[in-house]
Length: 260
Image (tube, rainbow, N blue to C red; front, top):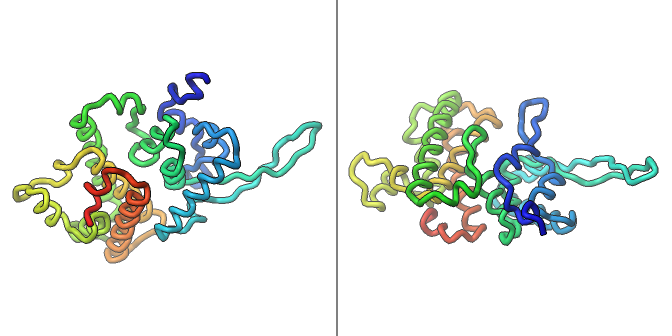
């Protein structure tokens, strides 16, 4: 098996290279191309992973068809003949769910999980680079991304009609932390007055919050949310979805992020 087949030479550019942008400026990925990158040789086996990802999407009360769009392509089969080939147009969230349900023995799966869950298009590092960081360095890196994500989310929330930002952010925390507000989390962590809870999270907990932030911003824009109540409800729902996804993925750090 070559180094490429083992996933040794993959990095985040691999996923950027197969990303497409539609006429509305929306990014998407084709399942067939993702199949190749994730080292699944048989479509049948990869479609089983897709079906599991679709089930995870459905269980999180998210419309499957918004993220997994059936498309048929005509492909050459020799002598000028063509046949239909099943494919999907996938959102970033769909790719994330596929990575979460993929074969974890494949090194490229770990990279896909990192890329689709926590990376941004402007600031990305390879799996090898990220893995080489200490926990403090990972935490600093994730905190920086989270800070930028929160700033962007605030701008989007403001455009959506949000004026009470404490209420808005607490809606998201309540969803992710099983009803806990920012103050509740701070008290549980034993923090001093006005000490930022995000400055007192590990890298994995920050990653979960970053995913909550980016997905909320995306939903506010996509659904054209225009009231504070709808924005808060959306943030809370996304928080619950991320919480549920973490628990379904069986992450060891789920207990440290989603307290029950």
